[in-house]
Image (cartoon, rainbow, N blue to C red):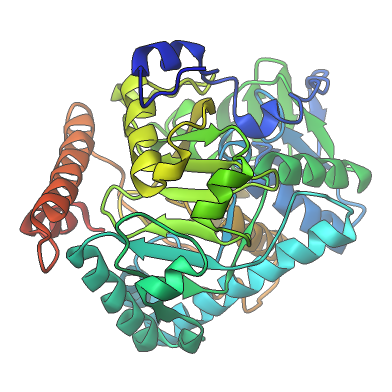
Length: 472
């Protein structure tokens, strides 16, 4: 088979594109559960059967088994970002620490960071207790630098960790030789390492969690499209659900609900995955353990080595579609496949002749200030959680536990975390929203290009300007 390196157009035609994700293709697309049978009443109605909704239902049912909980899902449980992501069970915080600190101070952020690190182990423990085999290996996270500017940012990130404390001694800077002993990345200058991350096959995890939730007695209705959410009432194409508590857990699909078009922006992210790497390639790359791999570029990448020795690598394609539209089937553009493949081959030249097995994409939710939010209005019974900006695999667990405590009216350490009750202004109307996001990623890509080509000693002025106007 001809590789993309030699004939991109021929390879693109041959690569399976979309179909939700490779994570499902390598197992199976699950059969649909039954749709909502008509109007009904419940104690709690959750809209969205991704990780946030499933985790929330899981902890609510464990704490109060007699609750009547209904989950409504347009497609199938785990259809969205929950079954398409890069498989990073990471403690990386969704959003700016300074933004959280502005309302809850330094200690509030430290508490949130510690809670995130605890959530990594919580997910692993639940998977073990529920007999969910999701290829989980906790071998940590590497962020690699491939030019001087990136290395400088990694060094700054270590100082940043020390500033916030909360286990900063766990983060270390590796020399190129120390990185090579783990993973050989072409052109690397060094890397940072954190132990607070585990590799996951996300579709296996979300399917296992959905099954666990059903065993607890939660009703999951699929093939049910919710159009409108009101206090104590959810309107769908299959009927109306009435419940004192209604939780919107739609992340990047939030704009599909009437009145929520500007709440969270659906940001696109794309992935490719290789065929299994032969031993001759693995011997050159190393990567004998299960570390996750990222970089310090502005238009960043994320990667994992799968249980069957494939490399799955993702990054931004078309970052945003006009009018907050989404592509449900997960197809990604040819130029995005080429860009991700070029990046893969640039980092791992030994894998250049290994065919790409599949490409896909999905959307994540981005609030205007790039910080996650959890809230429940006790008067109206309306609640939500999301805006994870790409760091949702662990964050959804912590958010689900927090929502459960809020629903049960408990004053806990979780309900006092600084992301609870955050109010963020909406995104600008079109065409300003589309123009702004396109400009942002144009600037970041240009900044990355200059940092590589010129080996700038520090972060590009273009990127610094982009950070100021975007609030990142």
